[in-house]
Image (spheres, protein in one colour):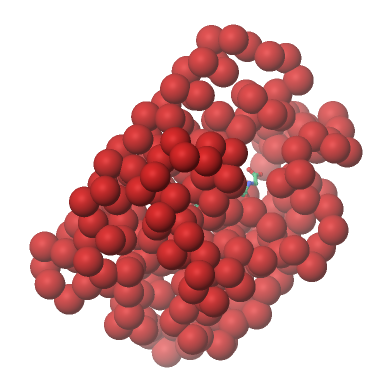
Length: 234
Ligand SMILES: N[C@@H](CCC(=O)N[C@@H](CS)C(=O)NCC(=O)O)C(=O)O
């Protein structure tokens, strides 16, 4: 049994998609990052970096429970565990790693900074807004160009690189119809997969979510995610 600690966020949804696609037995333990669940001693014992998602595999590789965090590592772990969604051919596999790393080191953090400065930061800083708006568009352009050449993100095969990418791109594509045609084509193919559609619902059972934007977003939430509570010495 795999326990996914997470909530209604793009990073947890990557793992939800993978668990469903891989037909693994799993359960969700809700972590409400707006309430500071990720800052509790119990959660920090799982991930000292206070980020979701985390998985606990009761049937780990060495015959004992195993805990893992960082979505790139989790996706690779699950793909190796099941032997699925990681190409067998050495070149195709390395390209899958490449696009996975592009997601976790580029798309994820840059889209995150974009959302922070455009939606969540109380003070609006034109330099930061311009910087991350342009960087997000550049990254979407890189992906759109790639998907003009290949069916899936890393080539002919549907892989964990696609699963990593979709939760970040789904919302962005909605806002920009017609602008990134290859991304749109790929996004529609992704969402047509029942496992992807189901994985994108991870965490929606809980009402409170930051996806809707700033409604109900308080100074306490800001302190937990980016302020004093986030940076308190532990
Ligand atoms: N690089 C990490 C990013 C994880 C991450 O940023 N998680 C966010 C939710 S999308 C989180 O848990 N934030 C809580 C916090 O920063 O306190 C990964 O890929 O797993």
